[in-house]
Amino acid sequence: MPEKGFAEAFGVTEEARAKINLALHVTGQRADGYHLLDMLVTFADCGDRLGFLPAKADAFTLSGRFGETLAGDSGTNLVLRARDLLREAVGVLAFPVHIHLEKNLPVASGIGGGSADAAATLRGLMRLWGMSLPAEALAALALRLGADVPMCVESRPLIARGIGEQIEAVPDLPAFAMVLANPLKGVSTPEVFRRLATKNNPSLNLASGLTGSAGWLAMIGAARNDLEPPARQLVPEIAVISAMLQGRGALLTRMSGSGATCFGIFASMVEAQEAATALHGTRPDWYFQATETISGGM
Ligand SMILES: C[C@](O)(CO)[C@H](O)COP(=O)(O)OP(=O)(O)OC[C@H]1O[C@@H](n2ccc(N)nc2=O)[C@H](O)[C@@H]1O
Ligand SMILES: Nc1ncnc2c1ncn2[C@@H]1O[C@H](COP(=O)(O)OP(=O)(O)OP(=O)(O)O)[C@@H](O)[C@H]1O
Image 1 (spheres, protein in one colour):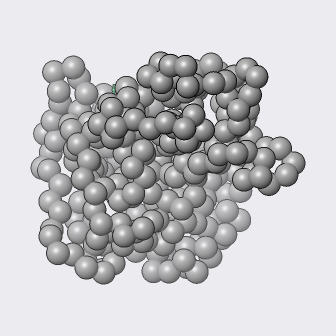
Image 2: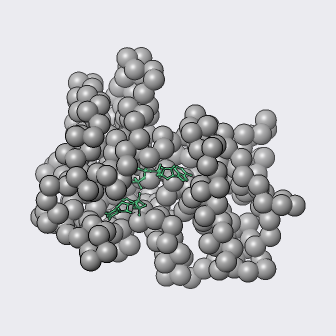
């Protein structure tokens, strides 16, 4: 990142919030092989940051704890794929741009970092280029970039069905005090889906009229992430890190997406902060991040 503050350095900035699958049920499979999912999703108040500046020629720079991880193959970065797709749709308005990605989220970790970056790129470039796409066209373009990208364009609590494109807001979902924990072992999403033992699991039952954290916690606790058992076969550290969160007092722990990130929900942000600090002390080479998720009412 340039020396001066991020917001001052770039005309337009966007947050790419981590996506958290509070529940993920695999309910079937489409003819093209993609799995049908029922998901309750929320977003963290932490994530990657993107900055956009008009430039003489297109440029892309990286910083942040995990920037190095992506430096080798920046040509395939989802940020650039999002830029190019939007440019195709926009035509002459799409002048050259310098995009900077501060990569704070671990890569291939089940919290949708790449998808959030792609969605933030679409939002940021529409602002920079002074245009907008109708909601349906934007959602269709986002889906071409990945199953999670339409959800990340929304970046607020939601239920997603299909492969993630049928989205319904959940305005009643409260904020949660959370710790995100990852052993920094990337997980291949297709490999996790391939290892699923059953593809026709019961759908997600969302009780109506839930109020307060306790009711929601009970409902989420009764739900599942059907991708967790196959991911645990691939990465044994998932069981370890999940037990570490429980040992620090998490009320509920679960894996997000196709892993390996697990989340622990805590009674308060003070407890979440303390747990993250203590866990970081135990394993400084892993990723522990305390975060308050955003509420449905924002
Ligand atoms: C597991 C989730 O993170 C839940 O939010 C997403 O469904 C995965 O979304 P994503 O990372 O954007 O995944 P994509 O890049 O679209 O798909 C990667 C690969 O995972 C498999 N895949 C993905 C999503 C899905 N519903 N069924 C699948 O079988 C497919 O083999 C696909 O080629
Ligand atoms: N900007 C980006 N950030 C992270 N990964 C990216 C990016 N662009 C391309 N990729 C590639 O996309 C793949 C998936 O990365 P990502 O971090 O989005 O996975 P994930 O967190 O498991 O996502 P999901 O929860 O959607 O399955 C990685 O193998 C990575 O090389």
